Length: 130
Ligand SMILES: [Zn+2]
Image (cartoon, rainbow, N blue to C red; front, side, top):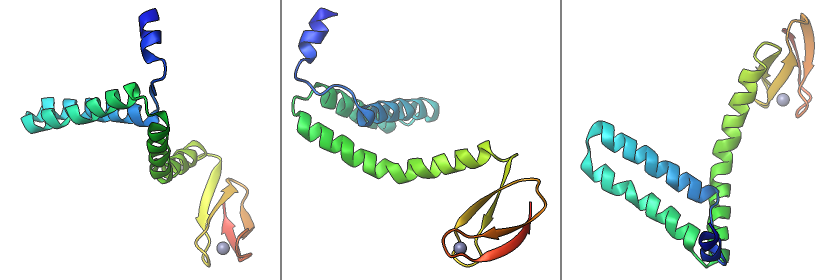
């Protein structure tokens, strides 16, 4: 493995974008196999080559910038998924209401009975049963 270490000196290596490209390539390959669309098989090589090119690239600054842009692009998607995941996690302990005035999501503990909910954003109050 020493030759690999020497080979990778000064090269960019792997990052989130490269992993995403590899995963995309694998997914496309699987879809191509299942559906039998040969053009998709050829297309699936592009993200793979892209990932390998990025890992072996010596232009570290440019590759970091690409990864940074990718992270910014992915962040809204990721944060939305995280919100859904959080809601599923405390489905039994909390209830969610949307503020009638400003549409902010309000999280309140479950099983307390009638409570007065005050929106932290617009201070609008409403009585809800939890
Ligand atoms: Zn509100």
